[in-house]
Length: 181
Image 1: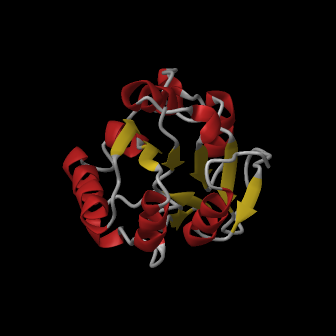
Image 2: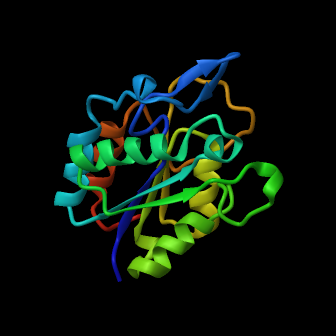
Image 3: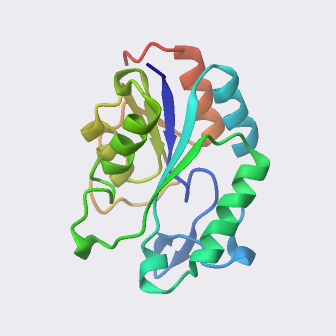
């Protein structure tokens, strides 16, 4: 079985924007800004033997706010800069009731089945309550929340709270394949 690190995209790999006081995903390439420490953090995770899978809700594609080609270009830019093994993407809105939109664990479970991932030896890193709950529901050994100082609309209890993907990678690498908090 493979150990993995699941990464949310917006707020973890790239910066969110703020609209009406809430964090939102970028909708154009001009708005898309990868965090300075993201590529090095992902390389450290890969060097430590983890499969790295991006698991991301992208409802703006379904609603027409972001063209699918723009989302794909964002993912290509990420792939060009860092060794991502796979992307699992939910294009649904909450109203669709799918099993893949975080906080449901469908994206993680789909990746686990596809790649033979041992979820108990794996980590979920995200910046929102939805990410933490999805990792917990999937049975990840640990969840890590990147705290950007946002007021969450729902509480979550991650195993670790950090300030950046680099800090999260440090935590994961220090723990190695052990996932005891």
